[in-house]
Picture 1 (cartoon, rainbow, N blue to C red):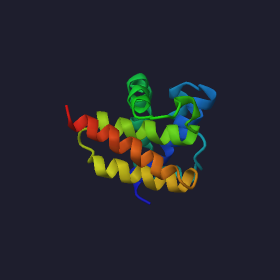
Picture 2 (cartoon, rainbow, N blue to C red):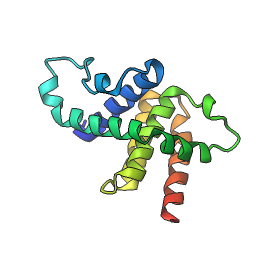
Picture 3 (cartoon, rainbow, N blue to C red):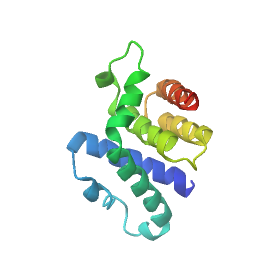
Picture 4 (spheres, rainbow, N blue to C red):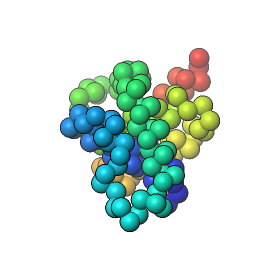
Length: 139
């Protein structure tokens, strides 16, 4: 697994923890749950995860508004916390990381959803992210 994929997963996990516990982002950025023996090999992933985590939390209101705008017949509070964490990290990538190709961000989100969320979650995540991406292109 590449460093960026691992970083996205770590950021998603930290965002989930932030949503559930409201731990300060500074604490979450330490990634204390990582195996100390593995940590040296994960430095690039940790750096990328910190970027995603801090950026996402910093822009959370705008990110959540973009997600809400794409939820047809679905209440924001009904989105699973895992799906929401994946969406948030991905929307940050789509809207605030100009150097990141949108197709890569969406494909990564789909793969992460297949691994960490429900059976059909990846379709939901793909639909929301694709719509947000298309809205951003229209500007």
